Each structure stands twice: as C-alpha cells, then as structure tokens.
Length: 400
Image (cartoon, rainbow, N blue to C red):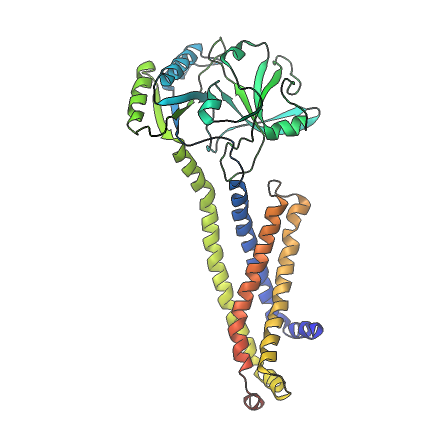
C-alpha cells in the first residue's frame, strides 16, 4: 500500500512538488511564530526576581548643571543623595534608591570579564544601597550593600544566582574575588547573591547580572539618572505632584519625569509582542491562502483523475476506500513537505544558531508546526476526497 501511494505521488510529481514546497514554506513560518510564542510563554512562567508593583520610576535630567561633569561630580552626587533622603522622608514611601538602569527598560550596561581564562558575559547596573528594598530583591546568600561599603578598599558587588553558578559553580560565591583586577583597578569581591534577576522583564530569559555599588561620597562620586521609589499600596496618583515639588525644591535646576514601573512594563510588552502579533497575523493569512490553494489544486487533480477513480470503483473499490486513498496520498505529500522543513529547522540546535532557545521550546515549536500542517492538509483534503468518493463507475467510464 505504501509503495503504491508513493507511486501515485511520483506520477504527479510536478503538481505535488509545488504542494510540497508550499507546505515546507508554511511549516517554516508556523514553526517560527509558534517557537517565538512558546519562547515568550516559557520565559513568562519563570520567576522574575523582583517586585514591580507599587514602584515608580523617576528619570532625573541634570541638564546644564551636569554639563561639566567630567570624570566626577561630587556636588551633583551630594544633591542626588539629598533627593533620596527627602523622598524617604515621606510616609507614603517605603523605600527609594538610585540606579543607572531601570527594570523592563531595553537599554542597559553590558560587559565581559575574563575569569579563570573564561569570558563571562553579563549585564550590570550601578545602584545605591536601597535598591534591594525598593525592588523587593530576595537574597539567597550573603547580604546587600550598606552605606559603609563605599569606604572599603575594594569594590563590593552583588551578583545573581545565574552569574554565581557560571563563575563559581556549586561553591559559595560570598567573599570570593570576582576575577583578577587589572592595573589601576580595584579588586571586586562578592558580598551577596540574589535570586535570578531578569532586568528586561518576564518575556526574556534569565541571564547573568551584577550589581555595582554607587556611592554618593568622595571625589569620584557622580549622580545617577534614575530613581526607583516604592510607595505604599493605595497611594493616590496625586502624590506624584507632591513628590515632584519636593524634588524640585531640592534640585531646582533639574527636571524629573515620573512613571509607574507598570507603565514601563507595558511598554516592554508592547515592544516584544508587537512583532509576534504581526507575524502571527501574516502567518494566519498565509495559511489561509495555502489552504485555499491546496483545495483548488486537489480539486483540479481529482477532476483530471475522474476516469482513474471510476475504474477503481468499477473494479470493486468502495467509497470509503477511495476516500481513504485520497487522504493517504495527501498525507504522503504533506509528510514530504514537513520532512523537508524539519531538515532545515534542526540545523538550529545542531549549529547552535540561537543559544537562548531551550530544547523544550524547540521541540514544542516543531511539534506544534507539524500538527498544524497535518491538520490544515487534512481539512483541505476532506471535501475533495468526499467528492472523489461520490464518482459513479458509469460516469467515469463515459468520461472523456
């Protein structure tokens, strides 16, 4: 039976080759969209590492007063420190901190350190001691920064669990040096480890992250450009105006832009999901066109095979047998198209083209694309196969 099916497919190789190509291209499109969606879904289910609710982001624009910062700006840093003190004095504020980058923002600071002969990629951010309280970070080892840490003769850092695992393996990272200090650089040393910190949000995978203490004292001190303020639940929106007035009184030459972190999160979702929605829409209409095309091609092929089908009926084939034959023949064509597409997409894990894609997500996307193509092919073949099964032997024998 299988040999006969392949022979039927080969006898109409020209029209079947076009269908195989259409199915292969559609399979690749479905695989791409499905894998991207599953990638986001899988990341969304992982712990985020911080609490974004009831947190406000304040963008600090120093303006002309920071034009001559040069290598350091202790005056501006002192003003920034007073801003933090004034913000924390409000009863509606639970915690406040300064940071170079804010969660969910697509910008950031990225670096590579050579540790024990291995290049380690990571994101990092300069923060003030109150950052852990403002963002609800969970310590898994050691401690967070303290104000007195800025007076140490070495640079204290806090790393997340991913980075600790990559650099120190299963060993304890607290108290250990972080790489080898270069000339004129201070030694970095780990004082704490937090849970996996996903700065770019729920839709992106875990990655290495390092927090660097930014003190507001000393000749090299300089202000940061972002404040994170955790307010008490139920704080009215009118508090924003009060907060800005107080900050403006401390730094009249600076300007401030306040946004709830939930708004920054929504912007991040829009940034990542818009391409997925567009690709999904294009994929839907592509599959619709492919489905209609398959119905048309199958219908035309069956009209040309009326005599053949009639002879089968005259030889004793039942309607069910004809119906099954047409479905199985299209199953072979679909399998060839899916097989060709699978041979192409398996190059992704083999060549490690997308390192952030897990095997589970890849396999799920591949399976979903296969199921989708077989389902579409079955639905498109169903009606033409029913028409073929209705062909009467007498009509086929008179067919010219």
